[in-house]
Every structure is written in C-alpha cells, then in structure tokens.
Image 1 (spheres, rainbow over the protein chains, first blue to last red):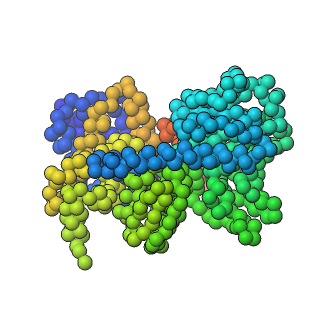
Image 2 (cartoon, chains in turn orange, green; image 1 turned 30 degrees about the horizontal axis):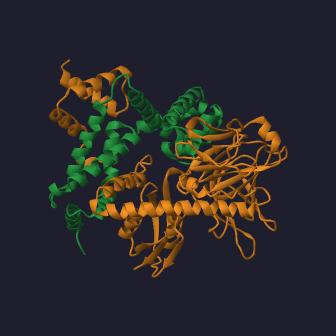
Image 3 (cartoon, rainbow over the protein chains, first blue to last red; image 1 turned 90 degrees about the vertical axis):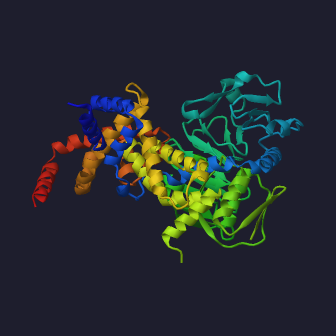
Length: 397
Length: 198
C-alpha cells in the first residue's frame, strides 16, 4: 500500500471514530512526518471551510474561553499599567483594613465565645492572611496563600495541638489533638478567609465547605451527638456528608438551615439584605423562628425582612455556587447588582449611583482581573461609565 | 441599516485599530465554528478551547497585518486547522494525551450509537441503569437527564473530566451489554431495520 493512500484511509477512520489503538498510533506517526503543505491538503480535503457547523457544542464553555482571551489581551496594553499598580496598592490596603474590621465584628458579636485579643500586630499579619483560625482561647493563627503559618500571636500555643492538613484536591482540614478537644469540649472555634480567598475545608464528619472570600464559619471543636451545628458569615457552598440521624444545622444571621445530606450554597454577607440559600441537590429546610420552608433542587429561598416570610424562586442548578469556578456570573442582572457582587470581592466600601440605565446583563467575568479591568470590560458592553475614588465606585453615564 | 458585510469590515477596521470590542464581536460570530472545527480534529473539548484561545489571541496580536476587507473566516479556518493538527502531531504514543485521545474516540463512538438507542428506550432504560455502579449512575443521569457537559459534571462532583469520561465509557458499555440480552433491544433492532429498509 502506498503511504498516501493509507494516511487518507486512517484519517477517515479517525474522523469516524472507528480506529484501533495501533492504527491511531500509526496515524499520529504519519502526521508527525508530513510537511505543513501536505497536512494543509489533507485537512482541506476532510474539513471543508463551507461546512463547519455554527451550532454550539454543549462541551464548549464559550464565556469562560472569551474571558481568558480578554484577560490576555487587555493585560498587554501598556498605558494601563500605572493605574493598575496603584489600584493594587489600594486593594491591598483596603483588604487589610477590612479583614481587621471583620475580626472586630466577629469578636464583638461572639464575645461570649471568644475572648477578644488586643494584639496590635493583628492587622499587619491579617494583611497577608489567606486563611485564619481563631481558637476558643482567642488565639489566632494566620496562614498565607501557600498555607505557611504567618505568625501566631501566642507563643504559648504548642503547635502540636493544631495541625493544618492538605488533603486530595487541595481540601484543607484542621486537626486538633485529643487534649485540645478535651480542654475545649463545648467551645467553638472559627475559620475565616481573606478577601480574595476561596478554599475548601473538610470538617471532621466529612462535610465539605467551600468558602468564598471574606467569610467565616464557626463550629464546635467536636460536634455533639444530636446535631452538627455551624454558623456562617459570608458565603459558602456546602456538600454535607449524609447521616440519617445526625442533622446538620447552619445558622446564617436570623435563618437556620437544617439538612441531612445534600449540596447547596448559602450567601449571608453583612451587607446582604437577606440570607440566600440555593439548593443543588437533596433537600433542606429553612427556619427563621417564625416561618419555615422546604427547598427542592434548583430552588432558592430567602426571608423577607418585613414580614419574615420566606420567598422562593427557581434558578438554574448550574449557576449555584458558580463563584467557586473563579468567575462572577450574572443572569439578567442590573448593573447595580453586578457592581455589588464585585464590591464584595474587591473590598469596595460604597457604591454611588449618579445615573442608572436600568440595563441588565448576563455573562461571566474572571476573578483574576483587577477591578479596573473588569469595569473597563463592563463599560464596553453597557452605556454606563464607572469611576473609582478612594474605595467607592461611582456609576454614571 | 448596514449590510452584514459592511458591518463585518467595519468591525475589522476597529479591530485593526486595537478596539477590543471588535474582537469580542468576531468571537461571538465565529467562536462556535472555530471550536467545532478544532473538535473535529482533536476530539477533546479542553484542547479545542485552548485552540479557540490561541486562534483569537493570534488574531489580536497580528491585527495590524490584517486587511479589513479580507475574509476573516478563511483566515480563522486555516489557523484553526493548523493549530489542531499541530496538537495531534505533538501527541506521543506513550503519553497521557494519547490515552485521553483514544478515550475520547471510544466515547464519541459509543455516544453516537447510544443516542439512537436511548431515545427509543427511554422507559426501559431505567431498569438497565439500575445495573450501573452508583457513581456511573450519577454521572450518566447528570449527562443524559440533566444534559450537563462533561466539564460541568466534573466541576459539580469535584473530580477530573478524565474520570467523568471513564465512568461514561464504562456505563455505556454496561448498558449495551444489558440491552444485547433484552427483548426490548431486539424489538428495537427490528423496528430500526425495517425503518432502514423503507
């Protein structure tokens, strides 16, 4: 058989997905030995430029790919450099202040549980902290992004009591010594994330908590026999390990969420007007003391402030917990809501609307970008203009 | 009202001047075609997405050399083919990529046949699904009932896309085995063959 004939046959078999492993290897060998011209002829024969389908392949994540492309091309514009660097400094400063504030809020709120430590070095350490652990004693451990212990404010704490383990797929688990658990049996500890952190914590019952930035969970050193209880500030996606007789309870502000085993997202930042629970599988019950509601997959529930009743609405399951992928996603949302989501991530204090166009947008934006880059992207597709002053965003025409 | 052709050359002119929104316009117009062409050749969504990125970034980098009235699709087509073939050329017999490619071929082949069978047998297939392992069942349902992409299933379950595909290959193989012995499958074959005969 002459080689030209066989490469055509092999390639045809390959395209029809009817090729053996050996023939596939043979095909690849042949392709590797061909010149650019020969390859161009071969492919032109099998893939006519007129006949490529325009339909979207479900496996093609078009938005994400576009975000990557835009990421790469915008960065190369040299004139934006100065502003970009200056802005990074502002963000870093803002982050240190806000983490400090976050701790302050937590300490004040849970003064019965935590003895607030008046340590002047706290803000300088938490400036760099990606993840922090606040123990029942009030002692605090800060970790950098590569999970190195930055410093702890108590020299007395023997490190053998607390260990941070990195498990498969980057999951993190804190491990306490038996003496430690014995000593703080009915006490709670707290895990808090920095503003740009996103990490998965594995709890002792196997539950996975994927924490968004500026969030914290508070839980006992060991769960009681009756309930697994945990308090959430901020946002997290929960994948609760299934135990029929051991309910998992999450309190987020005034809402209590009870589950047996399921996965769902809870958003409860201080600035949010209500606690938003979005269910992706299983079932959960919401309770705010006066009203109850049960959610089914693809449902989102929140309590209205005035009446305390629960509202529910349908959402797409794919959107639940999308923040975990490193993207902001929006579905038909007005500019102001989008900016509010951004503000959460970039530590913006205040948003001022000079002129709102009431336009709505759908799409996704990469979290790796600077705020300036993202706003620039938004300006391109909308009629709005944005300005950043201090830690405020101005929305105008 | 501008004709489509005028609009395109207008966008090309903007692109050449360095307007990023023109690239987004071209992307929205042609990205599906670029992806589909790349996918025909490399048979992998991840690799195809890489190629889409490569192609559009190259277009941006070389924008000053473009002619606003040239046929941009022809250029994209030539570039996509070249990048895709280069990807195949770089795959070594003993590499991980080779296994990934072969797995994709197997899966695409099974899925093409499975699509017909599944449509016909939606009712009885539930019985067959019971024969799958829990993980296979979960992944099969996410793919066929909820219509999620392999990547989305991988993200949802926190496992790699490679593992998802592995489970799908095994699930489809099992289902085919079950149907071979089932009267439903026989009647299905008869119906299908008489249909072909028409």
